[in-house]
Amino acid sequence: MFKNKSILFFLAAGLMWGFLFVPAVALAADPLAELPKPGGYTSWIRIVFILVTLFGWWSFCEWVDKDTQHLRRLNREMWNGIILGGGAVGFAIMLLLPWSTTGLFVAGFALWFVITVGVCCVYVVIRNGYVEANVRVFTPAHIKGWLLSLGKQKSKVLDAVERVRINSSKGEKVAVPTEPEQIKAYEAAQNLLFDALWRRATDVELLVGSSASELRYRIDGVLTLQDDLLSREESEGALNFIKNAASLDIEEKRRPQAGEVRCAISGVGGGMTEIEVQSSGTTKHEKLAMRIVGDENRLRVNDLGMPAKQVELFEKLINESKGLMVVSGPRRSGITTTLYAALRQHDAFMQNLLTLEIQPLMDMENITQHVYDSTKHEASYARQLQTVLRREPDVVMVSDCMDRETAHLAVTAGMIKKIYMGIQARDSFEALKKLVSLAGDMDTVADSLLAVCCQRLVRKLCIACRQAYRPDRQLLKKANIPVDKIEHFYRTPPEGLVDSKGNPVLCSNCQGSGYFGRTGVFEILYIDDDIRESIRKGQPVNAIRAQARKNGMHYLQEVGLQKVIEGTTSMNEVLRALRSNDGDTVKKAASLPKKEG
Image (tube, rainbow, N blue to C red):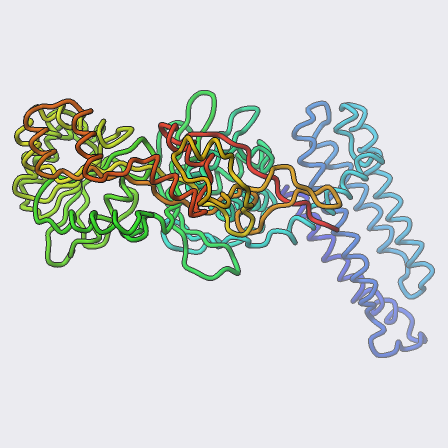
């Protein structure tokens, strides 16, 4: 509104001229007039008072100019002229009155105020007559809503504190914004990241649709629905804020994008946590997936949860200079973590360590990792493995046995190199059967195979809130456990515990889940000479199973039951892990305690 600003500039200049020079002119006209006291030519209090009022009128003029652009029934030029003219006339009357008398100044200012406000009220009354009741201005309801929003806005600015330190994909710290809309998105992102880190989530999935949103965590391998943390609008704000921090295109809603951020809860010691961010979408919703890279991906063999005898056997197999080791299990059972732990046992400076992976968990130091992407590589997975084997590696890790050619290459390479390979299977014997079936050459499998390991991940009971109980005697007998040697098992506390005020009682250590962290349950099928001969002869799996049992092999159920006896986990958790194929059990997150005050 350039014209309005120009007029106001000249009015302000006239005001200053009137305050500074009109008294001097009056003094010159009357030689007998009494000389004013020092500082009597100017009243700074009056100047500040008038300028503050003038600013309010200026703001109203700006609003009228914008408002008439949307209300086509009101003539923009006409109303701009009326509002400006009314204020200018009142200002001229006030300026021409004598300023030496306080009473006349007050009267002049009151006259200007009445004229100016009267003209503004005329516009408001006419304007409100053309619009619906919910968009009328300066009504009691509008003034009340404005005051409430002003109070909320003030509290929003005060509450925009940093609960989680966020570093962008470029390594720069994300500052706390000052704009109202950015503050809302920032707070939503802060709530999401803080809740996910506090609950120890490893995966976060946020779906934002046109009318609703859905938030899910994966905590200790179990999907958890978190439906009361963010509204649909807050979810959209958090999604866009995190995408921006990860250097993703906010306007791109459909095409898959990938980036990363680093976060840490403020006031808590330790370094920044790496979070991989991926976004994609459909016609119905936009999806934000975050994978939080935790310390469990950096474990070594001693940290996996194997009993002492299994650790001894596993390390013996790792120390073999050549041969094929198979690590098996269902999806999300920790196969890659175990493969990484085995690789860490090798000297990365003295040996050439290579991997072929579809989706790496993390970057491994001094290990060359090759990633296979079917959308970017024209050659097959097996062909890329062939390329890796040509680079004269000492140790190769193959994350997945994709097809017959991959199995044949891994088995053949195991004759002269150390090979680790992952296979999805329910137990060691099913994994062995798959390997023999895919490779097709039983003699080569028998000569190169060192062992087949199968595993599950179980949640560990929270030692702060676990409860002891006496197990059922019939259950112990079915499990072939001596009744007189078991005093108690442990389990999670019952759900629904509340305090005297009705607030949910949550353990501060596990956040109410009853579990804290995970450990592995393993069975190792060691390929000795007898089993090697059985494979070469093509004997059935049951015969190999009997031979392994004769050699002292312990099955998954037995190793899991031993962890129950030790108090590491619960019977229900072992049963859940053994019967689950991918661990995708969905639970509802425990509610946070209500804040008092």
